[in-house]
Image (tube, rainbow, N blue to C red; front, side, top):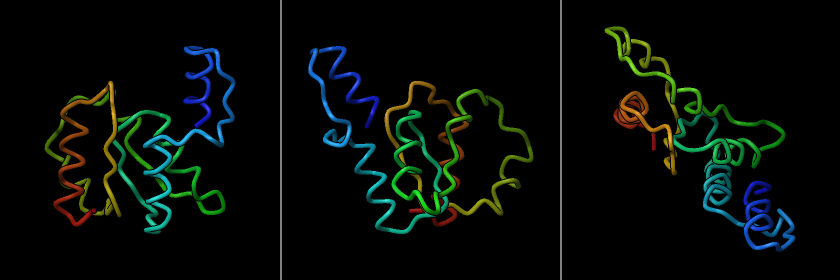
Length: 115
């Protein structure tokens, strides 16, 4: 939410309290908290990941996906690696580093029962 408030200030010159800025990333984090998701795969920006983790300060969930923007290849062991990687949910937002790896990973999570 801090990034959104900074954007409002730099674009419109309006000082906004980050606590009053409600983005879709914030709402996704709030929903994940209400559903008690502890392991998530996120396709999105750093802000989305921060919101997903920040909503649950005492016991933050594990959120994977941000570092996968650099991964390109899917090797023969790709699907075997996912067998033990059960995610509670797949969260999708705007992602400027979207690639085939992220889509394949998210798809496999959903096929294994992620919401």
